[in-house]
Each structure stands twice: as structure tokens, then as C-alpha cells.
Amino acid sequence: MQDYSRVRQLLQARRAGHALPQALYSDAEAFDFDMRAIFWRQWVLVGLEAELPQPGAAMALTVGTSPIVVLRDRAGEIRGFHNSCRHRGAMVCPPGRSQRQVLVCPYHQWTYDLTGRLLKARRMQAAFDPDAHPLRPVHVGRVAGAIYVCLAENAPPFDVFAAGLAPLLAPHDLANAKLAHEHVFVERGNWKLVMENARECYHCAARHPDLALAFPAEVRAHFAADEAGHTDRFNARMAQAGLAVGPTMGDWWQAIRFPLNEGVVSLTMDGKHAVRRLMVEHEAGDVGSVRWACEPNAFCHAVADHVFLFTAEPSGPQETIVTAKWFVHKDAVEGEDYHVESLVALWLTTNLQDIELVENNQKGVNSAGYVPGPYCEEAESLVMRFVDWYEREACGALERMG
Ligand code: FES
Ligand SMILES: [Fe+2]
Image (tube, rainbow, N blue to C red; front, top):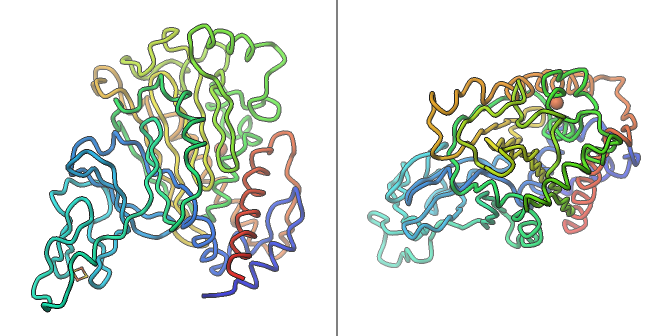
């Protein structure tokens, strides 16, 4: 394995409170390091259980460029595997969602059941032991209907995160959600630039005028109480309705139920519910948003009428694939209770605006004259939290590598 001496030097050169050195946003070596040190070690959000509604439902995707498959087995259990055949490594499940009785490798037809056990391997010699060649599992963590995976041999603790998030999400009943729409964006920017963009609203007032109508874009220190008492009144109302507001926070996550702007009940263009069949009936669906964000690569919003998931999958040193998903109540009928267009308009617009910002950021970072500048402590506190977390994880990984 590489010793990543250049990454070591770059991390040592980083000034506290400042953006990262250029090569950490652009180099192939740093990218390769990030996959091993970050994406193959951490819990990563893959979606909601509602995406795997029945036994045999499977979802194949990549986590830090490494293919995995997540599925619901015949007993209803959610399982995850490295999507790599135990024969010569071909992917056993095609990318995307599908329905499977078994997993048949397309290369030489080795066949696995939904628990990963190898059922058939044609013409193999008598000494071959199929039981010694199951698909390799990955860790699966579940919280309130959301699925996380971890590719590490020893996964970091998940329970504290799950215990903190579950009460916030419980009223949203994600188990009874359905996927209403999915949009995949390819962004020509390093994954860390994508996430830095997603962790601040310093740019929102000027660059996301629609989002800023719904969202407290200028609140001091992100979700801190505002001076007009809006947050206090909201918290008192939620307490009365029996809805948890948090916040809950750990090294790699933060979650809170926070109030949207005055008169706004959903994260939509007009601030109104886009879905008639609500996921949360309390307070006539005026329950703010539960925002939960997890390092390395996700943020989500659960409002009364829908849930929005954003995940960023690195695909190259200067390319990231962002997946946006919108979920609604499983009984909501498209065309009657909601129209996809109005459901997705706000985040779709916001993401398209962010792509422009991220791609422009990458180009400028690649400049011969780039010098990492200071973050705004008030408006970019969550970016600083992200970058500091990255630095800690990266240094920890380098130490383990020796
Ligand atoms: S690589 Fe899967 S059967 Fe040969
Ligand atoms: Fe943005």
C-alpha cells in the first residue's frame, strides 16, 4: 500500500480555520487516500428501507467507488454485500434497483442466495468448498427507516447516532414512505468541495433566492435561536405537540428539528405542502424540518409532507455524483395528491445552482495562484466542523498506516 507521504505533508501544511491545500481537492493520490481513509471506514447513508419494499428487492450502488449491493432477504432482513463475485470478482448485481430471487453472477453463473451463501458453482473440482465462498458482507445500520452501510472490518459505533436521531424522525414514519422521484447529478468538483458547499448557507441569500424564502438562510451560527423569538415559540409548540426537536450531535452527525421561515410549512417553491397526504399530521403539518447531516457525504430534510435525501458519491479526484431523492407517504397518489414537478422544484433548482458554484470553485482552486483562505466562523461553522472532522479522520488513518 502507498504511504501517502504527500497527503501527510499536505495535512501538516493546513492552517486551522482555513480551506484545505490545493492538492487535497484535486490530486489522484489524495482521492485514493480519501476512499480508504474515509469512505471505506465510515457509516454511509444509502437510502430508506422503503426503497426495498419486498423480499428480493435489491439496490446496487458504489460507496467510495467500491460496488456494493443492499437487499431485503426472504426473511425481510436488510443485508449488504460487497458486489464482487467470489470467483473472479465480477459484479453479481447490476447497478440500480432490481428484484432478485437469487444473485447470479453474469460471468460464469455462480449463484448466491439472498443471505450471500453460494448455492451453485458449475463444474468446480470436488475439493472446492462453496461454503467457504459466500459474498462478503458489509455492516448495515438502520435508524427510523434509513439504511447506512459501513465497509470497514470493524465499524465505528452506530448506536449513539441511531438513539439520537430516532426520536426526531419517529413522527415522520419513514417505514411507510415511498420513493417519489430521484435525480442524479454529475458535478465536476472534488467531493469535499461538494460537501463544503452543502454545509453552509453563506451563499444562500445571494445564490438560492428560492431556498432563502423557505429556509432561515441568514440565521446566526446555523440554527441558533433567532432574536425575534421565532425558534422559542416553535420549540414550545413542538413540545406541546410531543415532537422532539433535539439537537443531537456527534463527531460525524448532527440533527435538529428547526422552524422554517414564518408562514412556511414545507421546503417547496411556495412554502406550502406539495403533497396532500401528509407524513406528519401533527399541527396540521406545520412542524418545521428535521435536518440530519452525516459525514462524510449526506444531508437530509424531513418536512411534514416529504423527505429529501442528498448523498455525494466521489467518482474521481474532480468529479462527484450527487443523488437526490424525494420520498412521500406511500398512500399519496401521484397526479392526485402531488405532482412530481412541484415536489422537486425547490431542491432541483437549488442543486443545479450549487453545481455551478462547486464547478466554479473547483476551477478556481486549480488556479496556479490558489491559497487556502479563512472560513467565516459565523456562517461556515458547519464547514469548519466538516473539514476538521476530515482532518482528524485522515490523520488517524495515516497513523494506523504507520
Ligand atoms: S466471476 Fe462470477 S462466476 Fe466467474
Ligand atoms: Fe447551496
